[in-house]
Image 1 (cartoon, helix red, strand yellow):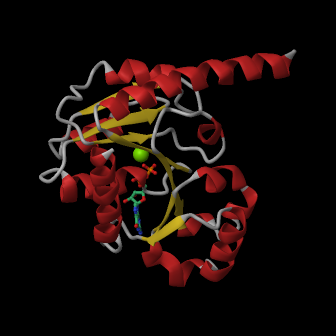
Image 2 (image 1 turned 90 degrees about the vertical axis):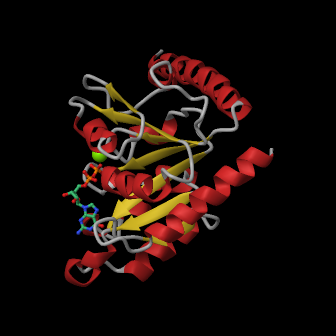
Length: 219
Ligand SMILES: Nc1nc2c(ncn2[C@@H]2O[C@H](COP(=O)(O)OP(=O)(O)O)[C@@H](O)[C@H]2O)c(=O)[nH]1
Ligand SMILES: [Mg+2]
């Protein structure tokens, strides 16, 4: 019974996500769903991304958190349109929440939609939001065993941002081991080593995004 209920919920979510994907595609918008544990650096990466790309592309951001508008406030300071979803306890965003959030944003001049999911490596992995790409952020202090222990999100992601690379020396993080495990789970994933606070790898990451936006426009 419980399995059936879960299947129905996911089926309903997938149908709405497919509608959102079609709607965004018709508008030529490239959408990413940013997923990580709490504190891996998602919002800092977004702030750096907005600072680099906001004069070149139309950007809109949807923030997901259990409560508070703190992340949306951080993004708004960059002059980028943002809407905060407060899930009131839910550990992930779903397509219905995103659909509601999109009504608060003017998408007419938007090329890139960035969704920051609730901090969690498990639940957000299975809920499609209609994005073009899931982007997973793993920060070095979380440990090199995370790809092997949470394979679902690493399998579904198009890009891994290996963040807080500035802490590599002091953290004992075995980068080769983590990347070996990752290659077994998802050989096609693109990896950027980043330090959002120092700016390392941010230009390369933003170039990847700009290239995807340009590709989407051509379709
Ligand atoms: N050392 C270091 N700290 C970082 C980096 N990126 C983010 N942080 C810090 O990590 C903490 C959590 O960052 P935040 O962006 O709020 O993470 P989120 O919860 O994933 O959105 C903050 O104190 C950031 O300043 C990084 O590349 N290196
Ligand atoms: Mg955040």
